[in-house]
Amino acid sequence: MNDDQLLRYSRQIMLPQVDIAGQETLLAARVLIVGAGGLGSPAAMYLAAGGIGQLVIADHDTVELSNLQRQLLHHDSDLGRNKAASAKDTLAAVNPGLAITAIPEKLAGKRLATETAAADVVVDCSDNFATRFAINRACVEHRTPLVSGAAVRFEGQLAVFDKRQDENPCYRCLYEEGHNEDETCTDNGVLSPVVGIIGAMQALEALKLLLSIESNSVGRLQLFNGLTSEWRTLTLSRDPACPVCGTGQAQQAATD
Image 1 (cartoon, rainbow, N blue to C red):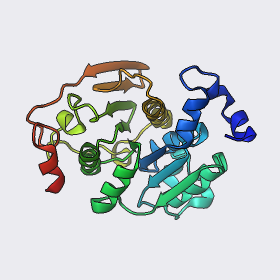
Image 2: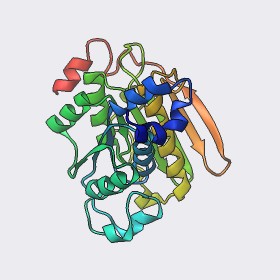
Image 3: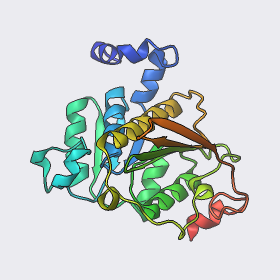
Image 4: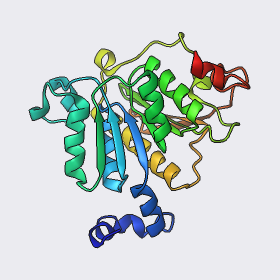
């Protein structure tokens, strides 16, 4: 690190869990963020400010006026622009020393597999089950840690899935495909700080994974109630019959 970097990240370097070696790890890390909306905004901004050397952010959507209430990566001047491109400009202003890649398309198929394999951590800030299931399959296949978040109305949830250890559950162990309806902010509304809280927590968990800081969030579902400002934690177990990560199933699911 040069002198400017030492000063920029000095408050993190002071932490014994980070130190200079940890900050160098962050600067060498690559994080994939899927979704540049309400969750992706705080997650990406904190990861950029914290010094993740390579940030890849994917989103096929365009910025609309109704987004600006909560999607802080975007501004009035970005209306009509692709969200990934808008996000790249904002993140470059937050921390000019990073390598930021914008993917202005829906991440799926081979491109999703390639980006997941190249990432040290994937942060899922998408807003639909189909995308979440696809991301989970890719993360299981490539053993890439996954930080998943969701928020709607006054409610949020956070979970960390790390299949580098076989006994840990995956996202598919929690939710069954085809049996859950998407609850979007477009249809249900959301109070803006709720997505900020969950997105910031996603950034925190991603940093802890990269720094190898032990986290009790792995294998747990954390539920946030914004009306009462309370958290509830549920312990998740690996489903032996899971079609994605169950015994002998992960490889088959990846090729379906």
